[in-house]
Image (cartoon, rainbow, N blue to C red; front, top):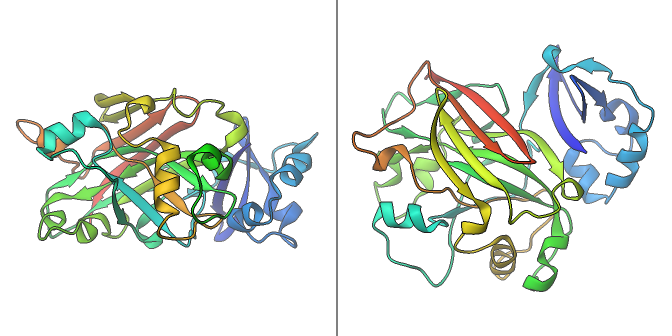
Length: 282
């Protein structure tokens, strides 16, 4: 399934993509499961799939505003410098442990919604990334069973305000401006992604390819990330892990290439989808 959260005429619901439309699972299952996070937490993805059998789309995709597929995660945990090409372009030394920082849920927008370049900076950079959403809770999860804790995958643009990111050694300010992170278009359930280590990630700005890498090139792979992160915090259903960006970020180009009002940013991951966001000024 490809689960989405959407707004139609001011009413928010969730559903599954079906061709050019959406089957409204909120209308079918909403009395039991309020949203995508509740559906995942109840381990009810099979029930949702059963509700799709023989169903026709309830609403056209073009008639809705897509929101982040999971708008209300308890935690968004981001991984820094997790591709060697990006590590080299930033001049960072190799690390024995993953670099972890956080993003707030209210900084996210969905597919088609605008990313907002803040008025306090012109150094608004793109970062195409693979996002994973936790399905099964766990603490001290071993690498051998880590993938079983993933409910699904999505595309992410971890928009970064580079000067604010570097005010101190902590990344948090530069990663948490309003409407700076694109997430979507859908949460693709794990059964549709048989090998998450064999995906290709491409970022484009105004149609120009600016990043491309295979997920097999991560320094710390998905199993290692889940094992490490669950060592210091309990992972709960609906938690999001954004797994790092490849080389090619705009800040390290000569001349630099930042997102500006009027641009269109895209993150495409094979088998997962294509996230597209226009860019506007605050």
